[in-house]
Length: 180
Image 1 (tube, one colour):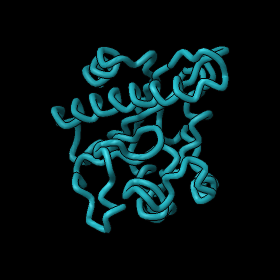
Image 2 (cartoon, rainbow, N blue to C red):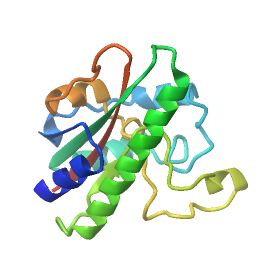
Image 3 (cartoon, helix red, strand yellow):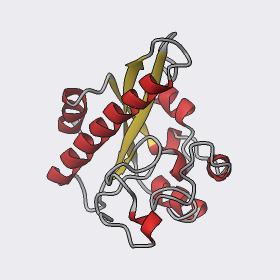
Image 4 (cartoon, rainbow, N blue to C red):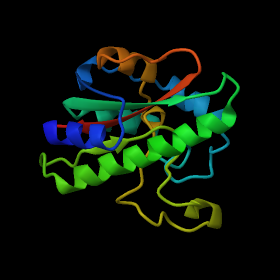
């Protein structure tokens, strides 16, 4: 995982941390939050609820891993209402997550393929094929979110040695790789 940590840092991660899956908090409540559709992606992306999968099965699948490498990006904002700055930071974080995912593909870490999780909806395609009632165009590359797997991100930050909030006028995004 040292190589993967180096990839994350080289791709722009502000911080990288490690934790045991047994220390990660999982909760079905995050899926309930998704159903409120605050982000506008519910039912519009294959990697978002309700289409990403059954929450109990996804939690069980994630808990079958042993370790988690967590990475974060921190975006600077003009003020706490800088929605455009938040969007720009999200684009940068998605590029970071894709770079980490490509690094995972190049590594052969274990018999169980590592699971890459990002922040928010999958951003592999400009437009998800879900909207066109077509199957996922990149099922082997698509990246679900930490929340879709029921992971409490604020607590994940703490167990991996990172801050969830990184100061005034910043936005912090998280991603992770679950592995054995």
